[in-house]
Length: 283
Ligand SMILES: Nc1ncnc2c1ncn2[C@@H]1O[C@H](COP(=O)(O)OP(=O)(O)OP(=O)(O)O)[C@@H](O)[C@H]1O
Ligand SMILES: [Mg+2]
Image 1 (cartoon, protein in one colour):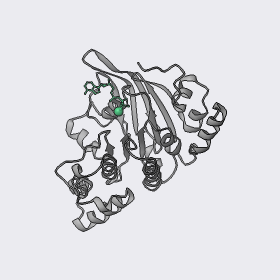
Image 2 (tube, protein in one colour; image 1 turned 45 degrees about the vertical axis):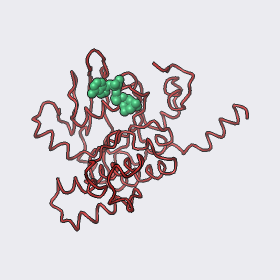
Image 3 (tube, helix red, strand yellow; image 1 turned 135 degrees about the horizontal axis):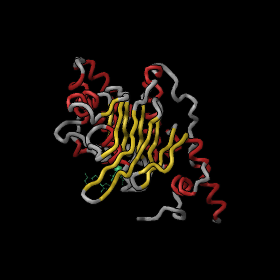
């Protein structure tokens, strides 16, 4: 098979890039006149290793932004700064217009309730069943009755295909199932800001595709500002309104998905096409 044929085959299989028509509109969007999530000049070192090198990004309110970039480049560290788990060495993180490190820890904790977060490792509570993991935020942060909680948890578990696993412990289920349980838990409070760190890693292609459908469905229903870190170009094509490309602790590209996937920039092209030839190497 010649390279030309290979190219065509690839293009046929890839999902179309999403149209970003609905971005910024819809119920409730007026109340987001200001910035929902904004990172400015973020610097962070661990020891002598500088991870964040002046990263700035204003996340488009009510849109799904995917963050792509090579392994070890600071994507997870960025999300941890956004949810207030890591403190910048310098620079700021503003959530709903407020600098989260200019407030008391109590206020930061309140703010975290408005986030739905799926960390890269899934981070389920090992001593709780899948059901109890997903019910946990509802029990902790709402006054809902157990019957009401049951309806919500069942619906979320059904969405990710885990109804049959609700009584299992995290160590009894597969890596992909843990991811899906963590995903269900992250969305259970209908959060205004959703941070997903590689929700698709460890999932088979069909489940990845189904999970992307769930992301789009939940986002269409509940709105919210979504940040999805992924290495999967199909996921990026399918769910992104905007694409941010991060390299060595800085944003090297940010723009609407349509533009990103049509970009002539060698760096953007290399990354979005997954090419080994281009400005990016293994370092
Ligand atoms: N708590 C920490 N202490 C020390 N170094 C850290 C810490 N957290 C992250 N790092 C380092 O910061 C760099 C960026 O890590 P990060 O997890 O953000 O990468 P990433 O872009 O998410 O990569 P991947 O795509 O592989 O998940 C890495 O070199 C990592 O070793
Ligand atoms: Mg990561």
